[in-house]
Length: 151
Image (cartoon, rainbow, N blue to C red; front, top):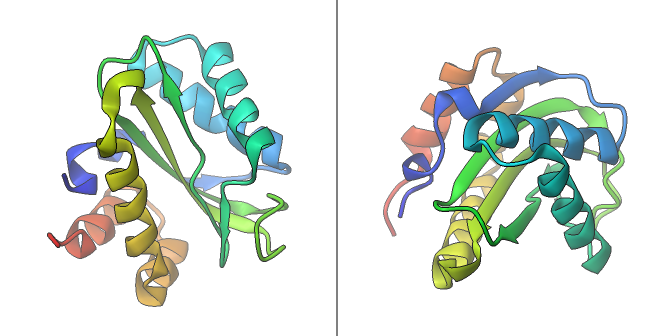
């Protein structure tokens, strides 16, 4: 599975102005609700509950908020570039790039494969730097697509 199999340009926000971790999660939940038809509050509550288990801020300005949802039919991915916000990341650095991953309960290993793929993509400093410069969802999608190579 490639990231571009689960991410579309209309699931990308490039110029968000979040002021807090909660607001960033709210923006992601709203976008996910619009695209999946699922209840926004249910998505937000699941993301907040997941954050209580431990931060999804993986460092270097990147967060990978994710959760399983029982009523979801397909893996959903979204990307947001925002003003830096405190995300309680493992390196205590603010987050300005976040990929949301929602997976069905029965997704099994696909959940972990998608998280690993996103993490691998964002470990590349040139990719993260390029994503920080984008102005449009289409340009963000192109960067992701061009660097989303098969293993």
